Image (cartoon, rainbow, N blue to C red; front, side, top):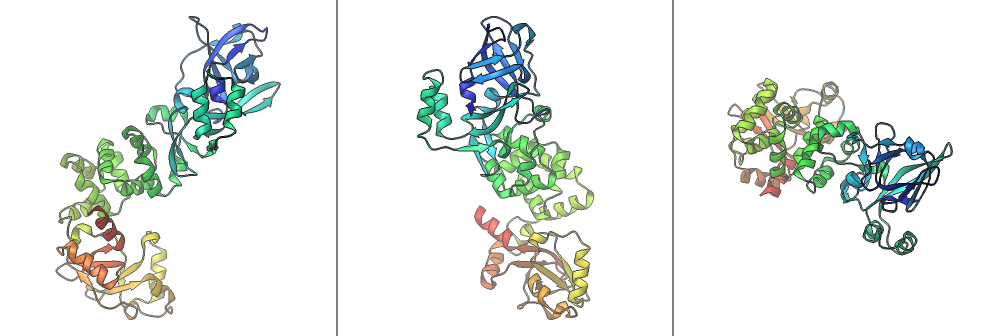
Length: 412
């Protein structure tokens, strides 16, 4: 195993043993090979910096690189934004450890040697985020590599395998050139990703949200601190912001837009489909500290005359959020609210059982103007998981869930 710190400043010699210069940087070309060191930047005094390709290197050891070509075969260095620079883009930079679900700082990069066609290729094996890497950085050029290696053996190791590393690149154009994706981040729980993003800079947070798919971005924004969410959305293009907010539950979308400036909020609403925009505008009209301001207008309601099997068959044809589907609202023949049925009770009932026979007692509901204090008291008194909100005609218009209550209490 070699370390990036041992190669920075290493002397490079050509095939005839002539001194070419010192290694000042080395690069990965992600589009070609995601972990291979593809080019070495070599400079000497005031001469034009040169670049050695990976197939022009025959041997590598701490402090020295041997080339298999003459110096004249090396190309002049020209900056390339599609290259990932190990020193500039990795060392001392923050990265996301997708396995450990945390943000860490890179102290060094561990390189594995691979013999191919008589040459030596270096591959990034892992990044060092522990004390050994920090010590190597501190003693770089001060103590011999052999001495540093003996010292680091006594220190606790902490490294992340390269396949679990997610780089943070806020510039969308450069991210495309580097072909950096955030597929690994999309597999993380939104709460974990939101927590990690809070440790990043504003530009880095913006870059991550802009590159996530809309559904994941919406889930993450719902978990972020309100202040950060507002900052992110106001900097997004209104069309992009609308695409993300469309994926949110109407109540969460309304809460987010309520925190934006009026101009930014209207800009997003104008980009949303009419039906979704109208739902959000209706919620924005309610006082945030009332049941109407807390409720979600997307909920499952069925006739109390329906059988358990009929309801299940209907539900199979709908696009429902199964993770949050806990209770079903019932309506009578006049479309008025008539109760609720827990999903677990419905599933265990006989197929021919009517939904009205399964509803819970007591029959509880509130009007949109009910205070949040009244809502909290009902949840606490009856140990509720959901509370229905009804209009003046006693028809259900939304529900408040235990998640809504907890979120409101945490923010209080």
